[in-house]
Length: 304
Image 1 (cartoon, rainbow, N blue to C red):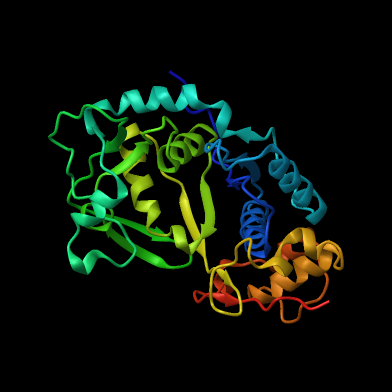
Image 2: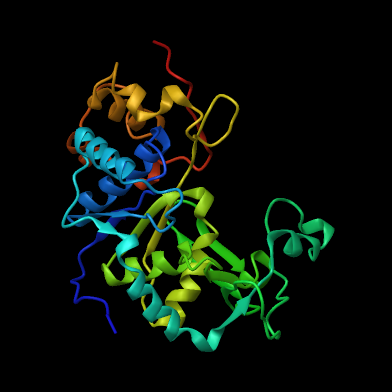
């Protein structure tokens, strides 16, 4: 069994993008905040490529992500970790959880049909259909049983959070029916074994931390400090994604310098008064979580 390395009390942050497309300004904001927080505390900053899904992940996107980070001045410490190369490790830790898991053959439509009407708000709460069933036939996912209790934790930006996993999500998947390991298990194992002490990411994953804290407890790991930040949204108030072409980093690199992009983000995030060109190093003495807003940040598409 692989166990966490001996890590000092130094801060270790990380950036963990999925190589399913090129970075946009929202991804850069997450990377910048994570880098600033770790480096200002004299810590290290790791890079992990979350390429678990073979159907959506591409090495060319991973290569472009790394090129973009270096161009921005966001350099990482140590070797890059690829999740696609770590399936044997995930399998070991899934085996360790066998007393808390069961096989599930439910489809998405079957789960939705079993939900109460007030739960049909886009959030799927698994009702435990297969908990006490002997599943046969079609390929099965592996689900983790969750307790009907509150998980309470403090977030650096959004304060104390209270999440009941039974009512928030229900038993959740650790390995999909196609054999691909799920995000929740992989991220906990990787962060723990890498000695990550601080996780910085968008507020859309704020409540996901409760699932991960529960997994940390079962596996005997100490959870990291969580720092969730507001999302960057487009003109319509939607979270940035690949459809916002002018906010994709590839497009922005054709007519803006790295310092201009960093300065624009620093201003949007409340770290500086004006969007002047800056490097990440120049931002270090100015960074404080106290200035990061809680509300999402509208970023208008750039015009050439």
